[in-house]
Length: 192
View 1 (cartoon, one colour):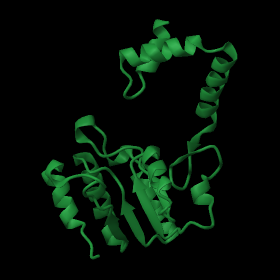
View 2 (view 1 turned 60 degrees about the vertical axis):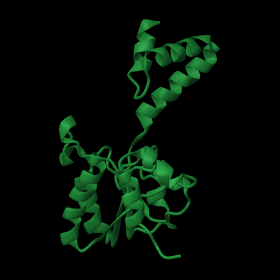
View 3 (view 1 turned 180 degrees about the vertical axis):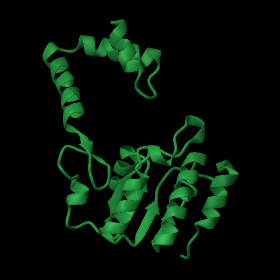
View 4 (view 1 turned 90 degrees about the vertical axis):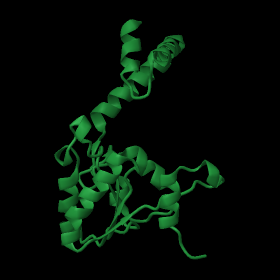
């Protein structure tokens, strides 16, 4: 039981109590359900790999986004991780392709550009004729640092580099917004 709890606890955002609840839940399930879950985990580890084009996770040779003829190869949206890609896809607004960095530059955590898929992005820019790169990294210090670093690498290549606008969430009140959010909202304003 303790070993199972420790495995769940290694997951991001899972504390000791949640790990214990997850372990107890698994142990309360039918044996066939647990076997299916274990087989699913094994299949994911064995079959999922990085797409050779965008570095997203896929079980195919090339991921469905990169494979799609409806997607524009000229615009690439750079995201930190697969979760960010999935969030962007839920909007149904983006018709280009993606590039997954699998992290952000974080000197405090000893994560540098070589630990990310920056080289793959640069190679792709040159071979695919990309005209615009949208930086969709987070608005924290590491996300901004990563966006600026990649932007400086891309500028000499003649690629237009844009950044997602940040601002006030829908339904929020101004008095509850912090200064950075208000500043971004002002910078990203557009004509009505």
